[in-house]
Image (cartoon, rainbow, N blue to C red; front, side, top):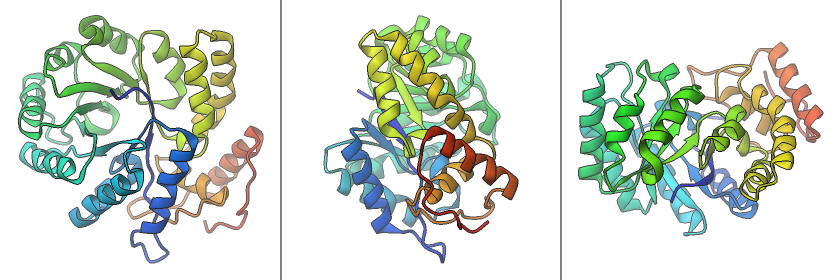
Length: 299
């Protein structure tokens, strides 16, 4: 479970900032048609810090309903409160999610022992397959491979999205855990290197716009066609890098709007990209061969 291409799904908004429910359903259908393996709503790329809890669970409900079992849904449920995270997981399970992604607690900076106790409680009480999420650049805490190894013994802890950027750390996780946990890349730009050390897929930002191409790279690698996988990796690389010209998800939402996907604006404190960076993004899209349909998107 939890292998292949998972999309860190953006959240579409109307002009007044409210949730665009029909567009969200449209995005789910887009990924169903593309053959994407799974969706991760209510995560960082989804702008989840700006939701009300009512919106949070409405998004999960809509994505699960539209997926209708045709694509896995791993709902973002992690917070820096253990009790709140447990409540979120239970609610996601009741709504029909296939799993929950749970980030290391941010701001309060727990020790490794605190991380272990936190995630064990989430697994014990949530009773839903969990994808751990290690992203020290955002949370201020790095979960060590030894901690992941201890957690991997739990039946409900089945995967980890690793966004530390360290291939060495990821290698050690795989060395310590073996097949007890699936490691997915948390950075599009290094998906192929992660696959080469035993990773099982990616939680992707760039897949919001080119899921078929990311799937092709994964398939080429899994079929042993390393030359083709490498070719696709280097074709995707400039586009992956363009998704992080400014803070994620600012560039990917701008890209989707430029491509006519009409996902709307961002919620504060995120804002539209600087004009010069938006120009760089548009150039990257054009260089990739994508057709810009909305040249007059507001900046």
